[in-house]
Amino acid sequence: QVRLVESGGGLVQPGGSLRLSCAASGSILAISAMGWYRQAPGKQRELVATITSGGSTNYADSVKGRFTITRDNTKSTVYLQMNSLKPDDTAVYYCNCNALPRYSDYGDYWGQGTQVTVSS
Image 1 (cartoon, one colour):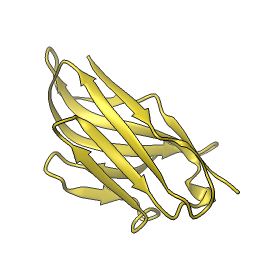
Image 2 (cartoon, one colour):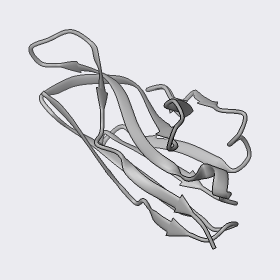
Image 3 (cartoon, helix red, strand yellow):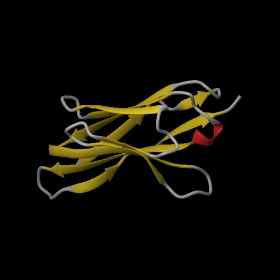
């Protein structure tokens, strides 16, 4: 019903930048919050940033001032601009949205994940 496709991950040197994108598709009537989470090896998945349909944002303390989340409601797409990347940012990044499909109630949906590796 709702499909999320991420892109933009890769290998970058410390101090570098990457931009992740995530597009939602399917029979969607509405999308409320969208966000990014990450999971490093041996660790639990954690919140990185979220954004409401009205544009209000929330960030993990560890990424404040370095990452920026935005969304284009006309394209059902959320972006994560990551600057000043550190090795500790290495993880699989997952896109998430809370959406209302045509024939169901609001639910949480996840992308397949995209690898971000910060290393020299």
